[in-house]
Amino acid sequence: MSITVSFPAEVRDWIAQNLTRGVAPQAIVRELVDRKNAIELATAMVNAVSSSFLYGTPLPGATLEIGGAPVTYEPEALRVPDGPTIRLGERQVRVVSRMQRPAAVLLDDFLSANECEQLIALARPRLNHSTVVDPVTGRDVVAGHRSSDGMFFRLGETPLITRLEARIAELTGLSVENGEGLQLLHYEAGAESTPHVDYLIPANPANQESIARSGQRVGTLLMYLNDVQAGGETVFPQLGWSVVPRRGQALYFEYGNRFGLCDPSSLHTSTPLHTGEKWVATKWIRTRRFVPRDQA
Ligand code: PD2
Ligand code: ZN
Image (spheres, rainbow, N blue to C red):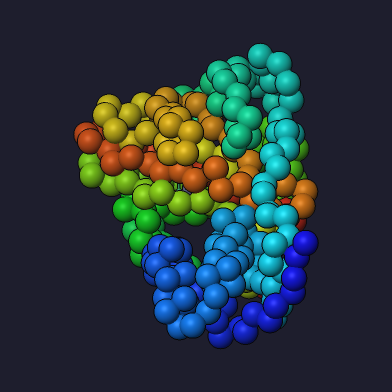
């Protein structure tokens, strides 16, 4: 049986701020108990806010159900066709492996060597230090979790980009217009991307605006543009799964289900590159048409 209790917005926001700062949930519960809250209530409040971070759902409202069924993510099958090979327009790509959770597929020959080289040549003169949207100001700031350089192409910016976007839409079953602009990342020795999820956390005000404009992110396609020499692997720490970049390969994973929940097992990282360089193209895909901030 569950009971309904009130959940003041200032307590909820205080918990969200502490989780954002990286304070451990148990430490927040302890602090709430020290402030004369019952342990069951403190635990339920912290769990409710943590679960909106984990599953990408809106922050809880003014009341809280205590003792109800916990929220859990149920994975759904990828929209990617079955079978050992997939025809995408003119191109035949080979499936290397499939994963159920997070729902993922690793593909050989998604890009030709020439396409990889063209992407690198187009991106190289336009690289900047990678940025993310600052949760407080909404401005682009140097990304805390990523020490690579990067740049974005606009949708359909060149005939090559148009061709690749059509290929990605055919693979994922998601429309070209749901895709954010293709991003190219360039890592040098020592560069990495620390553990993160690609879906947007609605507790973050800049993400709220982005979700309102374009919906949540539901899938990521990573395209590896060169072979790495050492390090620079894409790792899913909760699975112990590591993908070693190979030129032309693509890794597609989905983390959004039809109930609007996101999959925390999609947590991933790019391990520090030891030597040489790493080039990767990323496409993030939304639940509906992507509208950039400057075009809203
Ligand atoms: O470079 C990668 O392997 C990688 C993998 C997943 C980068 C990102 N995510 C990212 O920067 O979001
Ligand atoms: Zn990522």
